[in-house]
Image (cartoon, rainbow, N blue to C red; front, side, top):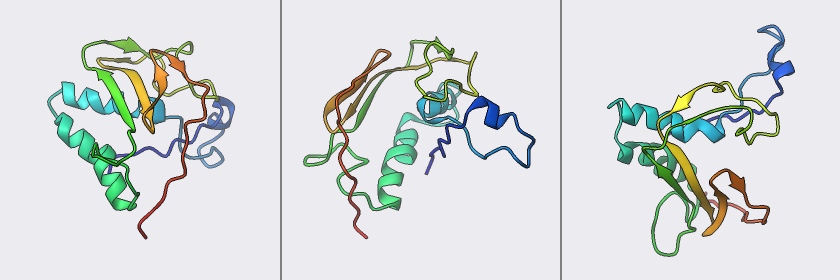
Length: 140
């Protein structure tokens, strides 16, 4: 399983001393493109990224109808351009905390669209304001 803890603490919280700063950081927006850097460097295949970030998560937590592209499953999909570089900046960070440890980093791939339950939730920098969420159910 490859996942993030996505703990969107404010920059001022993270600037505390090591023993008083909260753990984790804002990472979920950049997790996939960070993994795709390993693909571009020849360290991992696209199939293995999908296995570790989608299939393994659904299997490990026994999440119903998620993690795979199959008939009857919820269409949670990400469309990526593997050849469109972009640089993380304060203008394109979507976290409410307003910062990322990746600021200034250029990634070789970019997320173009995100579908949640078959509906477009994100397209080229714009987030849909529609309520697309559905409760996850588990086989446990």
